[in-house]
Structure formats: C-alpha cells, structure tokens
Image (cartoon, rainbow, N blue to C red; front, side, top):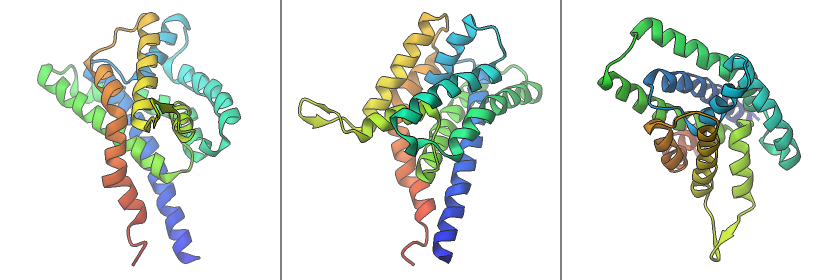
Amino acid sequence: MQKLDQRMKRRIALALAGMGLAGVSVGIFKRAFFGVDPFQCFCGGLANVIPINFGTLYMLINAALLAVVFFLDKHYIGISTFINLFLLGYVAEFTEKGLAALLGDQGIVGRVVLLIAAVVFTCIAAALYYTADLGVSTYDAIPLHIADRKPKLFGKAVPFRVIRIISDLICTLIGFALGVMPGIGTIITALFMGPLIAFFRKHLSDPLLNRGKNA
C-alpha cells in the first residue's frame, strides 16, 4: 500500500510539473517571436475572429474539446485536463508579461535561445503529464485516442509520433487560414514534437515514475 501511495504521489507531481511547464513554455514561445506551437497557432487564429482575451478564449476552446474527448474516451480526462483547461492560458499570459518586463525585447540570439527553451519545455511538459496518466490536455487527448485505436497505413500501424505530426499540421493550417502567420517555431514543433515527446518519455518521465519500482 505504501508503494502504491508513493507511486500516486509521483504521478501527481509529474502531472502538476508538466502542466505548469506547459503554460510557461507557451509564454516563452510568445516572447521568442518565432511563431507559437500548432495548437496555440490554432487558438491564435480563433482569437483573430473572437474578440476576448487569450486566457478566457483558451479556456472556452478547451471546454469545447473537453466535450468531444468525453464522448471519445473518458480515460484521458483527469486532474491534468482541468489544470490545462482553467489555468494554462493564464500561466502563459503571466509568463509572457514577466519575461517582457524582465528581459525586454531580445535580439536574434536571445530569441533563438527562447525558442529552443520553449520547444524543449513543451515536449518535456507533455512527456511528464502523459506518463502521469492523470488526464492530458484536451488537444493531446485526440491524437492519443487515435493512436490507441492503432490505425493502419499500407498494412502497418501508424505510430503516435506520426499521428501527432498530422494533427499539429492540421492545427497550423487552420491557424494560418484564420490569419496567423506560422513561424519557424510553429514548423519545428509541428514536425518534431511527436518524436521529442516520445524521446523524453523514454529517457526522463518514465524513469522518474518507475524509479525504485524494482528495488
């Protein structure tokens, strides 16, 4: 029972750390000015046609996606889902404003550093709350659900990383159609986020959760 309790504590810690880092990474993306991640590109496109502040709009978009996920697979709804729904947009706003006040406008080198940090933090964040398995963001739940159904292409199962790339590209194209110009950061995350999440799960978040399991 004690081991089970310790494992649950680790899962909660991973979920909270992952969601907090996800919000921070969105704020860093915005300050890098190289484009945001694909889902934020999608949300930014909607923000161009819906005149409310980003934090509130982000919450409403996720609430709509939550309804979809509820009918697809309730397994993906948990504490992480609701942290993402109610707090991530506001954490992103706070981070962006804090970086603006602390660092001001950065030159190209500073912006590249911020971009690299944003991409790495985004992928680590996703790996942490995927491994925690206490719910994921509503956007993440859809490609995960599709991957769980093991769709096949040319007789071979399509891996999660490919499904994630496809969903990210769709969000990027919708954001572009609604007036958001994708940047290099958007393209990098659309093409590499799936593989990087898989990498950080294998080498970081899964070992953190299972540390001492066989001791």
